Length: 600
Image 1 (cartoon, helix red, strand yellow):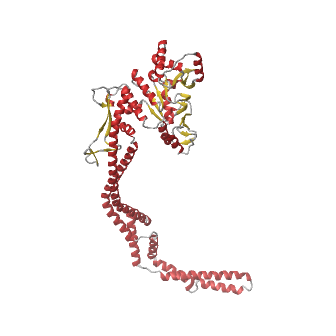
Image 2: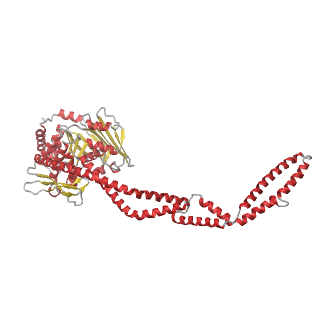
Image 3: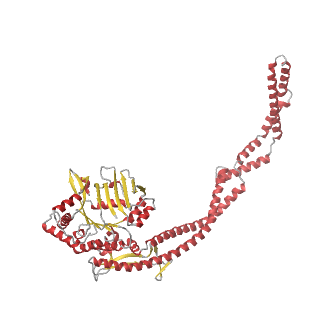
């Protein structure tokens, strides 16, 4: 159960701290006092999305902190312990902060967690029923969720939805594959031609550069022969060649080395030069002897380069890019070849998932129809207890025909949707003799409140959420009906902790713990306070709810009678009791922005 709640800098609230009790907790106060803001703050604890607009004007951040006693909630404790969080003492503190930068943090017992985890855990802790739930009840698309929750088949619906989406994805892929196969017939022929053309060319990455070099040599063969031959002659073979003359120089210097021994170095270096010149001459001779004009080879090279240029214009600016292109289209050809296999596999998978969807759709539908009969009976009984005798409540099923479908139900092919087959709508007749109509066409605000309370009361017996919150469930009702709603809430609170924000004294009088939320202006600032009421203060608050600001002796006596009747309380007004209660329940004052408070 929710044991403590602390709020700081949230909306118009500066700071609030309050302890709650088991059973039925009632929150009352005038409109705009901040009751629903507290519910909004609890929404943060449950992982609801928010933005920086909730931060009190002038502050950098806001936070909400709640302490839960889970000593009797084994399932929730186990879920939290699976996150590696210690729950040995049975207490859990959830804290959520929001900063002006837009960043927020969530913690459980000091351990940071993600918002998705907080939302999952929050759904196990508290179920908030607000005024917006009335509107949700008017939309038939929400009725399947309520019925499945009642039937305990939410897991089957989720499984069906996942399979339905998988079927849609596979069907789209198959359709795309079929279209692609039609286009691929011509594409495959083109790719095979291109691969053959490139393969027949036997291209090599470095071939082109070598061919161009060989072509240049053949085109200039005569000049190359002439220049290298002349060089050989000048260096070696002609009379008076460079080597011959250098030999004479070395011979002469050798003759005078005896005179100056330092010339010996010149002789040795000269002989080394002669050896080098002889190598050069030999190389030029060999080159010139092997050089020759070869028109036939030149023609072959030109043809090869011409073929390469043609392929480059078609497939890429270089041989490397031509070969890369070839790899790419080979992969594409493999994909085309594999598409037939994928087509066959998809058809087999689609057949299989359709069979499973068919079985699951029939199972879901039969369980829904069976549960609908029980739900109708349970809701009618609950509504009778809420002073709606003669009411008719029916769960209506409509199955749309689909001749191309694959699920047969009641002798016809029916259309599928993400949640099964058919549509579900709650129909309602509040008075005997009136035709059943959709809730949106016939139900008043008070009737909707009672229908939703009946549904919540029924569902609360089926789930394990320890705390239920009803935000102004009394909308559109009063008098005897309000008394019945109060009794219903009190009955629910025997097994769960229940919070109820109400404006009706008949409901407030059923509280085991009664809190008043109010605001006041001090020094142009609004102070909001939440206070646990003692007996005398409860009389005053219920008297206010009965008669407004003008509380009279009569309204006080009426309030006292209501409390005595509903709670069998012996009410005393001894000063000592009032003083003691007042000392124990001093209000927690909260400074808030006055203008913001007026807007709230």
